[in-house]
Image 1 (cartoon, rainbow, N blue to C red):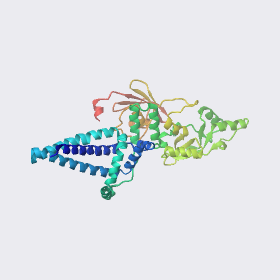
Image 2: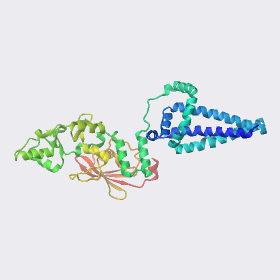
Image 3: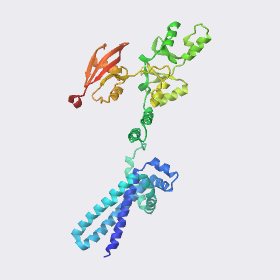
Image 4: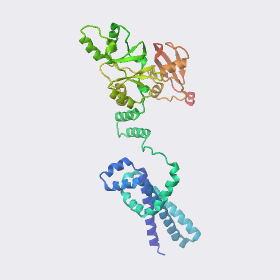
Length: 423
């Protein structure tokens, strides 16, 4: 028996086994976008892209080749071992030897290397696998056709290769690894969430909106305009649910100057209001503002009542962060006043506050979305300054009431006890 020849052929089979394993993991692990970019200037990448486009055929070729190689390797090992060791012991030794060799040198090592260098491996292995795809085409055509037939009922609509959640995770990982800095990470994260945000999420509530009543006398409205320091002011008649227009303060001053001291009718200067429903998403709202050439929208609830307003500045701030101008007074909705004490605006959302203090809000079920509303619910009565309640390790006190609503609260975060943690 020619043992050297058998060993040489066995080594060749083992190399083929490693080749098929590396090819499979390289093509399943590579980044498609990077491959497309490299294909613009690399011949090997172009071939790899062709293989990737027909990966079902490539996978069938790999599986056929792997099985043929494993069968050949097992047969050779059996022949080598049976002659000196006998039928029973030889077959056992051959099976054990092939298993170890294939597992270590034909699977683990090549797959580990190919996964780490997926793009390079795919480009270098693409030509030989393409040749084998052509050689095995009749057999793979039958196999692929049969697989397509059997899996047709399981086929679903093609999904995007990367979801928003996966992309957000990639950005967070890139920030943690120092690939991008924190500011760039926050900018990208904001852009990702922009399309899912509605105007209800960012609106200025009606109780915080400075408005003018068209039925008030001229002097009263003039005082308000001077006090508000806004460039645009909503104007209503009778009730804030009946907004009749938007006053451009610059236009008002211009007309006032031209009138040379004479009174002008406020209603004659109003711009047509733009109304949107609270469920409109920000990209659509921004597009609507551009088409209507307006900087302010009135947000309506399901009953057609005024919920608040949204400005183009509010929308852009969702991407780039706070934008301050010379007329803005910087206020803080949540202010840390002590080691574990916070001064909180009543209109801050419950989710935002719990995110700010990095606390899980599990078991907190409320009909309200704001901290002020939650306080009213927990106190089960008309709130007054000084009223307080405790929830888990939080002690919440009402510190200010304005227009029958909780405008500010003080929150003390006590150390969490074992009982709190077990809830």
